[in-house]
Length: 490
Image 1: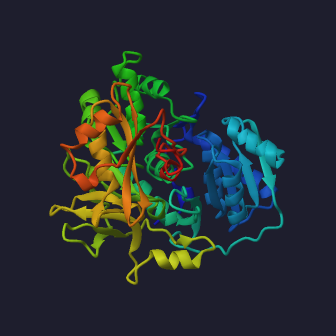
Image 2: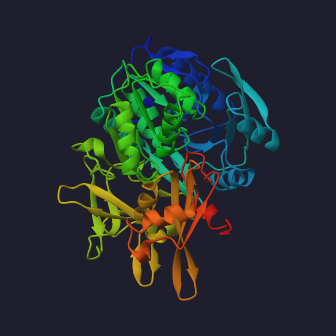
Image 3: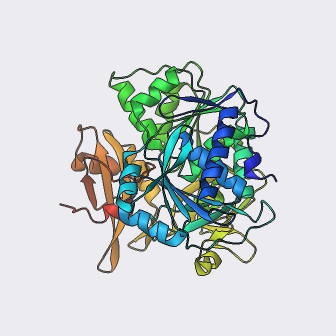
């Protein structure tokens, strides 16, 4: 397996590598120059192999250049979404102990605000822009490995939706494997224009879009952040590939169905969803509008991220997460009578471990090297995997197991419901099922409850249905379930 700094070595220098968030077009030759500029900048501040370089960013070419420069230097890149709170960013910086923290202040008001709060200096230019950074000469470098299998490339912090964020150590091989498999199995080619609205500080975008696209010599079009209208505009202008979380497709459909936007996508050939459960009803609506199969996939930061995708098998109409990645293995641990158990995974993309956390690393691996995903799943006879829920999200109602995704799917099937999330709440001697939804205004909690009687067994039906103006979302569009537990039930 090759090093990540060799990723673009075969691309023609005059081919367009990036379309920046502001429309600037950067060919592979100019990108190589920018990477050299970023490399020189980091070395000016004493950065050496084994150091951590933290980048507070939204999607832009500077983030790409710094990431690839870090790969050349055998430095650990720590990509962090600029939309994190002050406390979240400070906790990550405390754990990662970066020698340099760089802010993409030109592309993000939030990154600029973080930089101003922390007190930064201006460094040498990259891509013609002065850089905004903060240096700490007191930190210690980690050892540098002599193989891409053991050398950390990226330290990616988990979202923390189920606890304190942990730093996931991903090697050059972990990321290169996912990039190569994605590019090969999806047929990425130099003429491709991959529209990237998901943040590259998130593993799904970093590995299976940005790095996959560059490995194929394709063009990656960067959006600083998602906008339904801007995405539809980019599709009309010739983007060929688009992947996003389900809520992005919901928002685009809403604009199209309201007549406020048109869907014109003359070159679009591939669409995909991941990062959150895909409701079969939404999948069907998207496919009907776009005239394309909406591929579903599942992964996690600890697998860099690929575990399963419907792209690796025949088209499906259900909400299956698909088939296991090539060269990888999955199994269901301690399955119940219905075949449901924790999904275990092993393959070239699985992380080296959690940074500075041996106890958590040991707990997440089995004795034979399988990663405990923490997700409940079942597997069909043909190998297709179905995600059932998180182990920690399992609700036990009157002695019966209730899986939130099943209840969420039933809620999504109710007329007028746009989004749904389900959590449990402990009550005396039992657990309650709580349902939270957003709607188009045509329904209420009583009407939704009436529809659920025909869809769910009594013990699965929410004891409370709360209608929200909007769901609390993470920076990548996932519903923040811990925030729901603090919402009054009325």
